[in-house]
Image 1 (tube, rainbow, N blue to C red):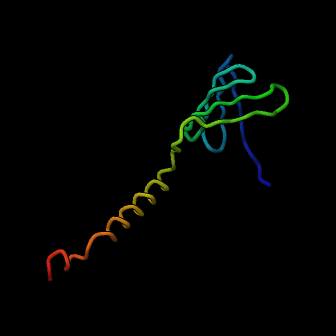
Image 2 (spheres, helix red, strand yellow):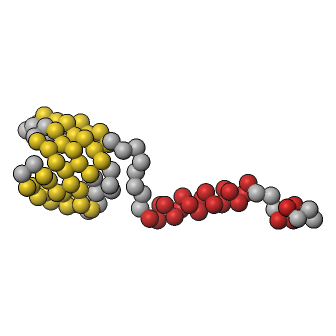
Image 3 (cartoon, rainbow, N blue to C red):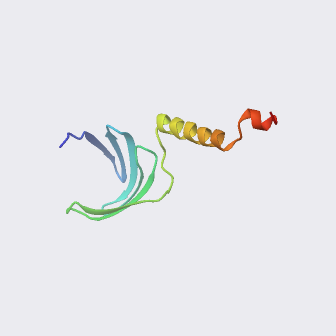
Length: 94
């Protein structure tokens, strides 16, 4: 089990959440919220106020990855593209 840090600031129907992962924002009324997570994903939250039970649905299918993961994916794709090409000596008919 690990410790989790989260601090929530409320301004009427707006909510800003500070956590280890970053800053998230949402808007709504009790039981229904629309927001953006710290990773940039949009979501819809529907719940029963006062119970802690809620349903969370991410609206965008794409997930923003950290720069390190994006670079790793680009390197993998480049390597795969290079593997599909013929060696230079075959290209030059040697």
